Image (cartoon, rainbow, N blue to C red; front, side):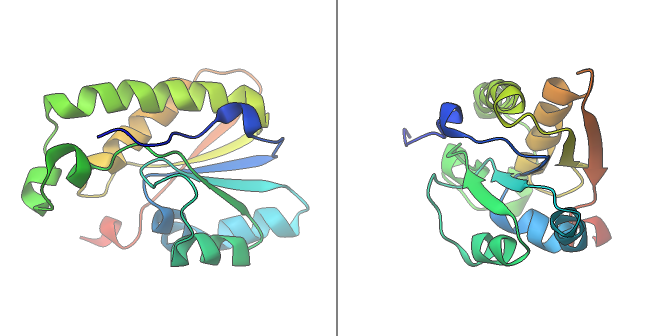
Length: 162
């Protein structure tokens, strides 16, 4: 399935970058942190990897309500890659995930220099969906060893409680 992808060249400069598998993960997992970053005068971007480009979901509106900008990358989610919404199947890693994992890491590697964000927040990968683990892995690949950047990990809520 081919669809539009985020054009990283169009990204502006931000102080803080929150990476999420889906739009609601940051809104549910760390809304106070997003709001706190905004209240400190930092420009904040929330980037949802597995949402269609230009999505205006309730989660995107909630993030904007916290004072952050919102962008979606357009990578295909696990149900799209596999043609199923079975939670059991979506938790397992399959060959279909490998190309998306590499594309997510490439996209984040391009996003870092474009945004120049010093503070990067990524999920711990605790959610039951493979999309959560792929997002974690891509963020670590792109940002963990990069000098001058702080990588923080947040718990996905409510998945972390399960």
